[in-house]
Length: 540
Ligand code: ADP
Ligand code: MG
Image (cartoon, rainbow, N blue to C red; front, side, top):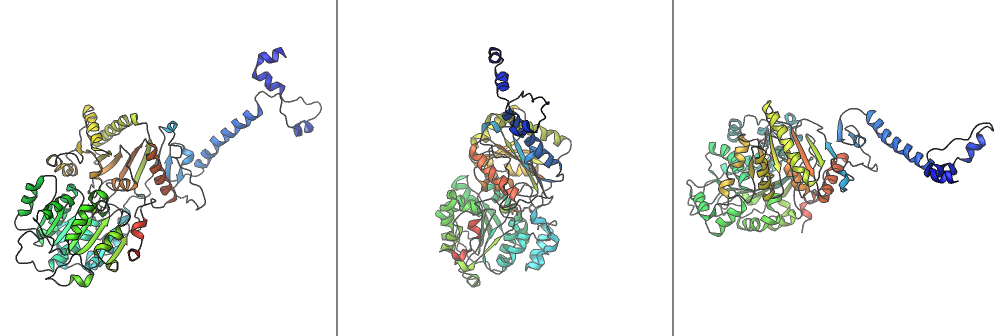
């Protein structure tokens, strides 16, 4: 017994040989009793763990082929051809990510197709001529953008109702060609209208409202290319430079037929009676979700109040008493958009168009999520950017957008990249307007291949050379994720897109889990769709 005590655990085990009674009965009398060296419970647990480790590996091996989700822990891979049943549970790679021990874990939503959904079956969609556009406009489009031959799905469904005079709300995925879908009908409407004789103050006939100066510049450039050949003046009104600049912009001769403006600058111009919206016959809110968000809502409300919105298509017919046709486009829509519109237009006159891929995970863009400690993010970023730089030297052509959640992070990270001699541009909302001007164009033209920015660069900007988006800070909402992601994989993109997101906080993990679940179940992202899909006639 003393020996047993000194042997500790093994002796304890020897005293309690838990051999099932059945075994004893079945054993012959001369057979020796089995020697139990490891406690049975422990042995069973070990065997169970081993089989758990081996089992799913085997299932990964018996299911070769393309993957929808590839995870660091291979047992969580999901093959592309597997469709989860409604009641089948979806094992999430990001499941334990709120726990600190999960750092260094990662998974990717793989690319399922090469081209953007908006481009699929493009040739079967038809030609711009079939949509009711005038030959003069078609000719101008052909000369200005020879690569634009077939309309995208969004253009095919938005242009005809706009030409018929309906107010339109269009919600379609980023990069699907929404700009042309409203600009072409806008220009056609202005072509058929007499120019009012005396204009005491500038009174544009077409107005495109956008949330940022960079987007205003971009839309103005597209509109001007088309408009100048048609004899229409296209001007831009952006804020950030004070009243003197606004006055200067509006005093240019000849006055604008089409104005592309940001809400702040236009609001100031209206308040100072420098512009009138009485002649307006076409009003567009591009990136309407952002324009109707709290930061702009008051300004936009005021602008809508000053515009005479038509009751319906019949109201648009009198050329001497112009009324405005209203178009809202966006990739996501906030709650209550219908309510807001019902204040300015009758619900029956609104046509809602949503694309089938709205709020879906982009199937043609690889999206990687990396669970990191906050302190690891800089090292990881520098490593990725250096790798990108080496690839550029060997001929790769794409550029990189790095998103941060605040202007101060952009500045701070900029200094760190400077230390590492990584050349880049910075764009954030707190920069003086003079510094901010032209930065995005520089990036678009390729004079620098890395842009550090906040969400001001996530809305609407066309970036066909971007191949990599890094969410250095994970976006705070799913809307922001969609908009940031939309800077790659656009119609006309020259390079396939990839997104890498750093995930650090528990609230980041909650969003990542929603994205992963939507990808695994091949569903749209939750909580974004309801407001647009509600039939507007149900609004009070
Ligand atoms: P969205 O506003 O939906 O995000 P854009 O209007 O900015 O998208 O268009 C994205 C890109 O697609 C632009 O570079 C544009 O020139 C290109 N594009 C638009 N329509 C077509 C088309 N019908 N065929 C080919 N490229 C197109
Ligand atoms: Mg756009």
